[in-house]
View 1 (cartoon, rainbow, N blue to C red):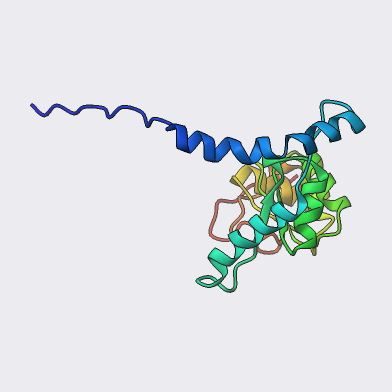
View 2 (cartoon, helix red, strand yellow):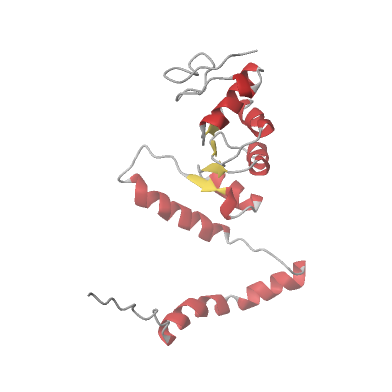
Length: 181
């Protein structure tokens, strides 16, 4: 019998905590002044730091993957200003809901990935209305059928299963068929 012991959780040393907390406390006057001027709760965005971190992230991958496009997942922080700052620096937006898609379409970006599961017919219609700006990731055959229904104006229950294309002409190749009404 082999006995495995679980290592104890890492301990945050005083030095580690000091290194993490000291920079925050060093800016406490800045934060308190902002609250005094604008009230609380308050969200502050350090734009130069955000741009610097995003640039470092991009640089880490571009040297090995030069043809890569970079996207900010709006679900990670829904503040529009964050998305505006990053799109101005060439990032696209990854959205996972109709609300996020609508917000992304209102911003000045031509690179939107709609990757959310369970897209509704209205959300698919909105994405399909912007084919030059939105890349639609399909999560299931059913979702592809709903997209084909939006594109062809047919009842989605009567559409064949889709292959890898978003064109009604290619839909159903190498898949089962379905009677249309």
